Image (cartoon, rainbow, N blue to C red; front, side, top):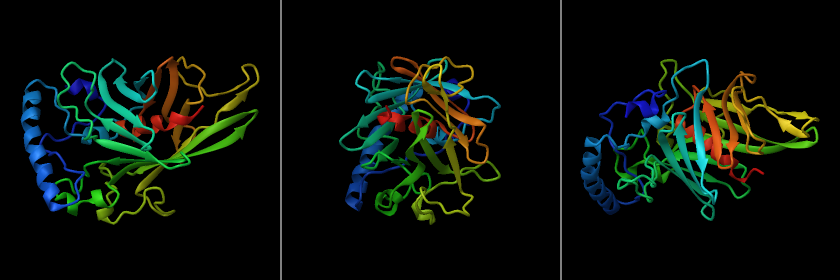
Length: 297
């Protein structure tokens, strides 16, 4: 329903389903066959208002607002599965972590729902990987917006896929504590509000190194906490949220406006975290950024 993603701009209903994963023409035929079979399931779910195949709505920045839009993340007991919900409790995205593969898979369907026949564990909408040192994370869209209708062997799936965000982690001392900080690079926005599609087939290189004079990428930085002697801990001001102490808590700001919070993530329960953010971030960017705290302790 429209209400589940009401801060987002809705994407045109005519956009199609991209293909990905194969690397040869014969495998392209298998992907096409899978798509045709899946189309029947999708048509059935569309009639029930339950299909969530168009992922561009998860890529669009949230609607502009002076305040942060509120969401929350629920973590599983084994700390490997995460579900994103709106403030009203509507399900938005599901993420599953594979530690040995160093990857997080993101899905628009909830495998825990009663009717989850469209959930396919082998077909994530987005994936996020990290390096051996856990200091750099990269989110990609599995079916690129630019070349989603091209045969897979002619698409960017063989060249790194469409990049959605790059997150870099460092640790710095603050007072008597250690501050986990991050630098985030996301594709920028044009003056007309449209997004930069970071597809390698459009001549764009690594999002992690867009170039000093590039205005096609936006840089976000963490807000530095202060040391509080009374509680003997690093603290941040999460206005309007009752936040519990956690090494995973963070706030982000645009590098050109370091005092203006556009994303904050904070523990509010044993397995629940608030995730509040606004324009120019999208749902997948904010959700993915929050999960890079997986190893922070």
